[in-house]
Image (spheres, rainbow, N blue to C red):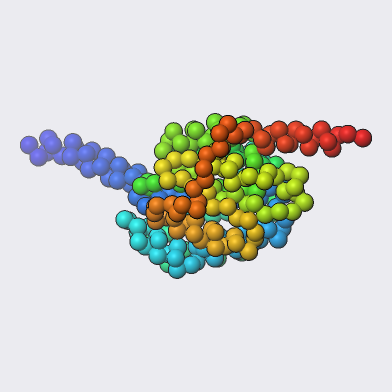
Length: 266
């Protein structure tokens, strides 16, 4: 009887072993850090961003949030984005379940600094993130896109379609609108970028925005945001924005068209 069953048992054990190998590693959260490096960002600002994320990941607060999760580990990727099709992976999907691993990721962020790229496609960044979740080797209790930016979508597909596609897959989107003031922001930015992010970009249970009004606030804002995302805590009232009725989510595309017309005038 055993001789008869042996081939069957062998196949069953092999199949079970393969299934186990193919199972994704479970983590508390799969966190996609989507960081704006559009041309409106100066080299100085690009460096502040990298160092701000590095400082946050190396902080005791973020490490405690990682260790305090139900499983005690997260998966993280850091991707810089600009126009449609312009995404650069700086940190590929990486497991973080020790303080040392968090420090290693933080250190990698400041080894080299890249230049900015043209245009601003929030929709492209969201679409890229959704695909990245499907291709990684992790299974998160939550999946979160953490997207920063200093202006509205002005390239690629409209942002609402990309946002809705991500939400349909159960992905939460949080925002870090960069509302600093300079020559570029006066021409290409909008004064209520935080409201734009609330109305047109973020979504999902517990989603929120953390506006950055000056660059000296950046590192602290990133740390606060990462702790909220990793720990899955209730969002403080100051990060909730009252919805604006009838907000125009194509404001970025219209602003780009208007500026292009102005530049073409004699």
